[in-house]
Picture 1 (cartoon, helix red, strand yellow):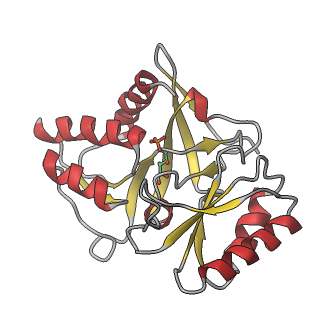
Picture 2 (cartoon, rainbow, N blue to C red):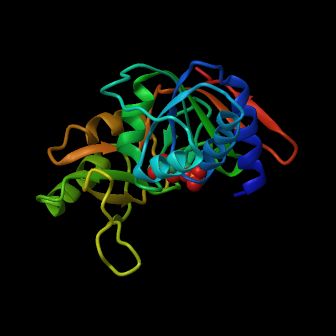
Length: 232
Ligand SMILES: O=C[C@H](O)[C@H](O)[C@H](O)COP(=O)(O)O
């Protein structure tokens, strides 16, 4: 992971921003570069409004003076800029390493387009080396986890499924006060099928697979950034 590459991706992303746009503001270290650079432009007079995908991003954007709104007031956004934990050549993503996957998916799908910002380490041939986060309702979560394992097996995915804790063994809570189970599958042969099947399990709120949502990836390199469109 390279911080310089993340910053290069964020710098290139600013080329897509125009005055008057309504933007989804992603979560994580790569999205943070973008939000900080956007804050500089806003301070220079750029007129945009943002919908943050997490409390963390909301606090940062507020600190930087970026005007914020929400999806109730502004249900259609122009572009969401967000990071990813993994992306493949079809721009299918794994997200949620920071636990923000649910709001991120809601905001991204309320946008005319989602642009993913990444460093080169995020680009993979097959999704799944990064543990897939699945957000579940706390009630009955162990049963839900067993069903996640069963469903995953039917899609060729095996591996430990572990509740995410903080450093003190306290369960990690998302901004919507749900748990996250991290599923260490190693490889996901059918991300689309798995994503649909997981979301049918009672108790699963959503999972970190983003399928057919991103329309462009900006991958920062040591010298600049490459634009990648989804391969069919
Ligand atoms: O929940 C967190 C988000 O999905 C992030 O966008 C993702 O984890 C990538 O984060 P980073 O840019 O810090 O690698």
